[in-house]
Image 1 (cartoon, rainbow, N blue to C red):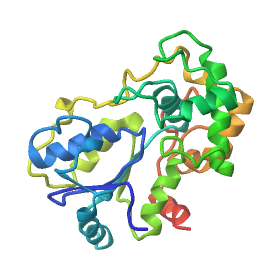
Image 2: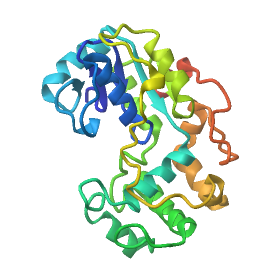
Image 3: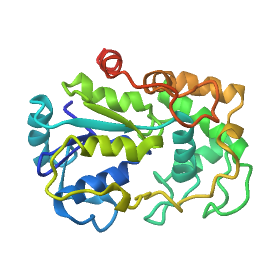
Image 4: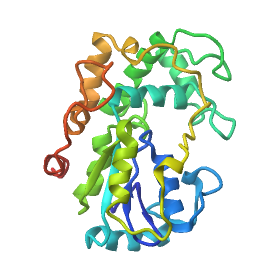
Length: 272
């Protein structure tokens, strides 16, 4: 299986396991900048050069050697499951993507037909009941994760622990796991341990939120979207994410982590 979703700087300074909706665009641009002294002109996910990516055939042997030989430190970034799935909903379901089309073609019409969701009209700009629509989307997300129906789970709402486990199962080891909610501190701790061709001053780095503006703005606080049933579905889908990455399941209003990540626990439980 190898190391899907893994990126590495061309200089070999650091290895990064990408997790969608967890500051991946900003992290990718930081890694690109650290090698080249400039940002990639466009969405870093579209870059075909300047970074080693597992999806590029010519990068796979280089990444495999670096990961299995522990040649460079490896890290990843995680996010509160409540805010992550809300972000996925507003971006991927309600929003029009940068190519001017809906995400995954017939996905949104399927959700409208089978789950009765509303996405705010053709461009996502009309008023609609965000809470009711999101909760119906949550049922769909659970169906994809639990039964793989009516489709396999999408990378943007499949569990973070599932993304991270492929790296561990195939022989990788995380030296650091940082939180999106404490991004500057976490990313600085990564940069402090590596040598880069170009110095990175985090305070000078913009945030590359490639999904911003795709969909409607969230109209309510996070906790308003989750009733008892919604929280039950969240626990069914993301119980390991809450446990391993130390987020509060009981209170969706608490966005920041409530404990320290135990890397030994992460590797033991994700390596099963």
